[in-house]
Image 1 (cartoon, rainbow, N blue to C red):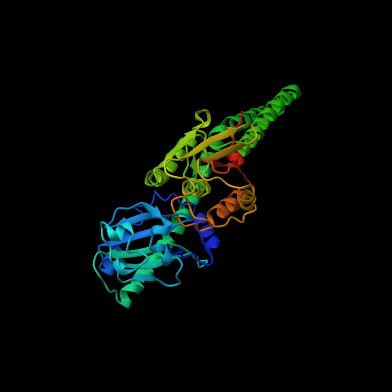
Image 2: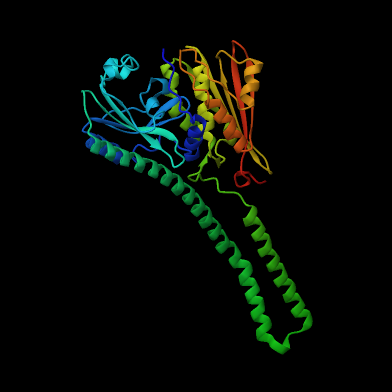
Length: 404
């Protein structure tokens, strides 16, 4: 089995991909027009928009072939992301690297492949736009240039969708704050205005003790406004989920949708458990799919057939802060103390999985980097030969905490 191609800037590539913070299952319609356009330009029946993380090729949009994901080591696009310009295979059936792959040996019996990297502004290839045919094919240079333009537009849209998501979240928060201010401040302000009018209308007939009483009432209303301002500044977001939030139930649903197929392909039991007591409390979804997804894929990689991968999710809520707890436990080969220290130092290395899956060596290093960036902690416990548990604790921003 040949060693897989690994881009020289692999960790930077993965960091660029993680910055997009994508839910790979949510973009089928967003790129459908570009996938179709690419196929029409190339004159091929199939076009795919693929993003590649440490373990998996995710098809976020397709035309002519319905597919959602495959192991990275089985893909042709893994070679495209390691190239500077494009990667072309004139006949997959005669290429020793691909002739035994399921999509060549079986339906749809693919023969031709051309992939164009999806390159970020930092020069990292996070995926590929590829066109495929069941017949031998040639694509002239003019059409190839058009495919490059389409690939650039895909990256532009990915960045745009991320920016739009951030703006929606900020706009929602601003609108909610504005509504509360307008509603809650009207009463105290109305009282102050009314008392001031009474004093003004009475003029010289005001008695000093009455004026003092009015001033006390004005002072009380003013204090209530200050208290309201403090409350608004420290209050927490409503329970309804915004575009940048998960709760445990939605998080569980996403993980099952994304990784159940990998488990079935390897005949592994995959279960996601949630703490129902905190299942509907909102929390930031920033980098959660990247962190947890890499841990799940790593666990499946080192778990043999008929094994188990269990994910436990809990949100520890208090008056001061919330902590999201993620536990990924497997019944795989386990880790030595030396290997655990290497991972926790951010220097994870590549090894092959129990099913012969190739290792790329950066998945756990990326997890460590992302967890550190979110000021969280990661711990690993393992019994070699019996499995391992990866435990991640992520403090949530104060606006996601629950006040008494």
